[in-house]
Amino acid sequence: MSTKTAPKRAHSTGSVSPLDSFFKISERGSTIAQEVRGGFVTFFAMAYILVVNPAILQNAIGEGSTITPAGIAAGTALVAGIVTILMGVVANFPLALAAGMGLNAVVAFTLVLGSGLSYQEAMGLIVWEGILITILVLTGFREAVFRAVPRQLKTAISVGIGLFIAFVGLVNAGIIRPSQGAPVELGVHGSLAGWPALVFVFGLLLTIVLYVRKVPGAILIGLLSSTALAVFIQFFVHLGPKNAENPTGWGQTVPELGALVAVPSFDSLGQVDLLGAVSKIGPIAVILLVFSLLLADFFDTMGTMVAVGGEAHLLDKEGNPPRSKQILLIDSLAAVFGGLGGVSSNTSYIESSAGVGEGARTGLASVVTGVLFLLSTFLAPVVELVPTEAASTALVFVGFLMMMQVTEIEWDKPEIAIPSFLTLAFMPFSYSITVGIGIGFITYTVIRAAKGEARHVHPLMWLTSLLFVFYFLLGPIQALLAG
Image (cartoon, rainbow, N blue to C red; front, side, top):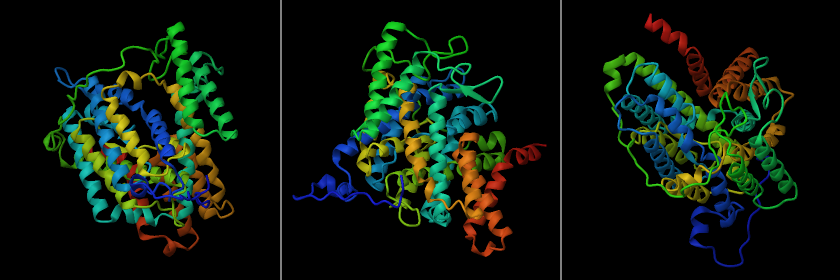
């Protein structure tokens, strides 16, 4: 949606409630009902992390460890709930946080299996990364970098993230899959085969119909309706999880009715060793690993807050969201909390845009999402009822909503159009928000310099572009140092 269109202001004939006043709900053109509904949608769009994070991090659990996948799931929900509530209360922004996808894979496969660190030592590096990025916020550096980015490039980042999350939704739902003859293909051998595909198509079409009919809660209704259909199908068909032998099975969660409540075990909390990695792999290797974690976290959040703010019509004329320093501070502290909680770095989730698409405009939506995360430490079986195929309908539809901002980019100006195009292209194709931002930054800086306009590029854009060059060459640099 266009960031140039101001939200409608709600005019109240009576006194404003303390809740409305604190979160500026009416001022931002929202209602308490919208915020609650948006909070629910964001939670269900993100709930897959409670299943996926343990599945990834369990690869890093050593033999004889007291850490269990169930404990990681409970810790994931607990930390996500705390930091998301903090985002809502402190920053008053409709942004939810949880263990970062990609960052958790770095912990398991790069830090532990690749570098030989223990689970606790890997979490120690996550804590250090969080501390460093928090210092950058407190000194004003992180916000200064954010404000140095040209407005239209921020718009391109937002649109690129829309394409990225739509692609994520399609892949997670099994609608787009790897192919033997091409990089990807539609469904199974070019066909939408299997009951899960039907669940996704039903949910997405229902959401579209409700949206064009201007029915409030279209995204949430579509998500819950497709979940109900999935539970109904599973009750009679008994599909298993998707794998090589069962390509038309369910994705990351199987919508099977069972116990509704489970007692949580928080055995991942405090599983951290702050200094062990230095003695094991040396200070140079530690610095490079922490830097790579920091750079990914740094710019992922920047892109996410711009995308969510743009969709919520909360950006100023320069493309900056309100209280950006508080947003960045909570996000930075979330990395520290994630490491201390033994569940990997927590970061802002682009799935928050699903709740914004449902009407969320304030931090109250984040509080609702956070409370649902806390409750999910006990209600994990209920959360696991929502299959990936149902949750992905929200992601794909929100991708459309975010794509609508593409008209704000001046496509007749090469210095804007080319970096914007490459940002849009690289985010989904590289499956990384950070890569898309880095390519856009570097290209923008090179083009302005080639036109003799280097002095018009903000010094911080030069600095971050150089850092991205270093980031993209990190593998060869590490190989040279190892040799």
